[in-house]
Length: 275
Image (cartoon, rainbow, N blue to C red; front, top):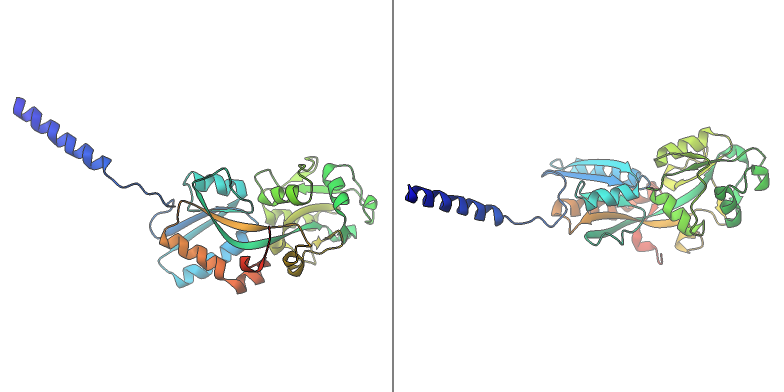
C-alpha cells in the first residue's frame, strides 16, 4: 500500500510541475487564433471598419470584429484583455501595460444644425454655450431660437479633447441631451433645430451639419497642420503588451493606408508636428 501511495504522489507532483511550467502570454491575445477583436473610439470607427473590410479581403484567414463604445471603454477593455485592440482619441498614461500605436490624426468639428445660420463661433461663445450661459442663438450671431446641446458621455474621447482644447478644462453642462456614438450625434444635429454638438469630421455632411470655424479658423487639414485649428487629436490603437504578428499587421495596414485615411477625413501621423 505504501508503494502505491508513493507512486500516486509522484505522478501528481509531475502533473502539477507540468502545469506550473506553461509559458505566460505577455502579448495582446483576446481573440481566438485567426481573429482580431477591437473596441473603443467611435471617432476612429469609420477608419477601422473600412480598413477591416479591406484587410480581410486580402487576408481571408483573418476575421476582424469591430465595436465602438468610446475611448475609455476601449482603454479599459484592452487593459483587461477583453479585446486585442483598444481604440482611443486620448492617451492612457495610467495603464503602463498598454503599448500605444498612433495610427492617424482626427480633426473634430463643433457642429450645428444649418438652420441656426451660424458659421463661426469664438472660443468664448463656445464656452458660454456649453456652460449653459448662452441659451439662444441670437446671443451668438445666429437667427434666434433655443440652443439644444447634444453631449457625448464621459467615456467619450471626443468630449475629453473638447474639454482640454476648447473648454479650458471645464466639463460641459449636462442640461441637454447625451448620445453615446458619433454617428447618432451627427444624425441628431441634422434633425434637431438649434442643435450643437462635437464630432469627428468623418461624420460631417455639409448638407446636414455645419462644422463652424473657431475664432475664424475652419476645421481644414491645412489649419491642423499649421496648428492654427486646435480641436484635433492623435488616434491611438492600444495593445496590452507588444501585439502579435497578426495584430501588428492590421495596425500597420491602418497606419499606412493613406488614400483611405484621406477619403475618411483623417490625416497621416507623419504629416503632423506638435500635439
